[in-house]
Amino acid sequence: MAEYVIEFGKDGRPVESDGRLDAAAFHRNHAAIWAVLQPFLAGKSGDVVEAGSGTGQHVVEYARHTPDIIWWPSDLNEAHLNSIDAWRAHAGLVNIRPPLRIDLSDPAWCREMHDGSGPAKLLAVFCANVIHIAPWRVAEGLFTGAGRTLRADGRLFLYGPFKRDGKHTAVSNAVFDTSLRERDPEWGVRDIEALQELASNAGLELIETVEMPANNLTLVFARKQGE
Ligand SMILES: C[S@@+](CC[C@H](N)C(=O)[O-])C[C@H]1O[C@@H](n2cnc3c(N)ncnc32)[C@H](O)[C@@H]1O
Image (cartoon, rainbow, N blue to C red; front, side, top):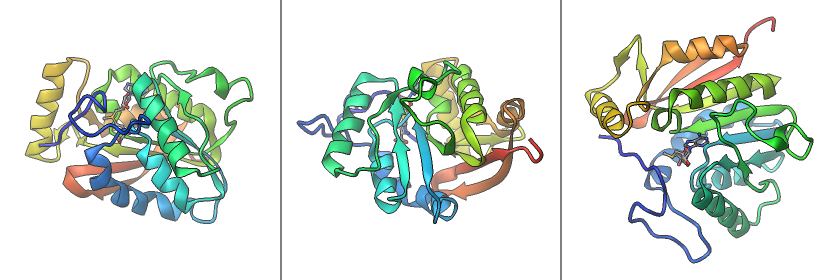
């Protein structure tokens, strides 16, 4: 069964003295996710926001491969924000900006997205393993913000477990969903059709569904044709 971590650093995994946290899932999924992101990002420049970055390891890994792209990690958890900044300092990459404090349940995301000190229009938004470990309003805020900030050619990449037509894609995901809902009734594996509705309200549409290891998917959303 998939596991979930609410706060890295409190899950028994090592914490570096500078605050860098380590996510076990990162080591399992970063290469498979990169195989989906890379073809879209190749040869492009612009700003990419990662929503709910957690430890910050994905941003560091992907920024290494994309010197022409500015990466904006984000989270709302203090220890995670510290970890992201510590990974950023450790990597020494000039194309990673300090983490933004974005609470996705606020559709405005954060002040920096509005006062010119953050990115303006985004090439992409990337969000991994967040919306099932959070209330539905987090998914709502993610789509509203993505719809507002993505460029005409931008993409929202959403990685995690999902239900299709209201049904789990694997028994392990059903068990995982039950464990999430027991922990918090507002959490749970999300249905793709419900996400498509959020996307549509935000001017986006699902253009690709990529099968990923361990019964996960990456959903790729783009601006609706003609909008
Ligand atoms: C399971 S972790 C995934 C972290 C990272 N994306 C990864 O794949 O390793 C979920 C992350 O979502 C963040 N999160 C939870 N609620 C959030 C919210 N309302 N706004 C932004 N981030 C949130 C948590 O702090 C945590 O870092």
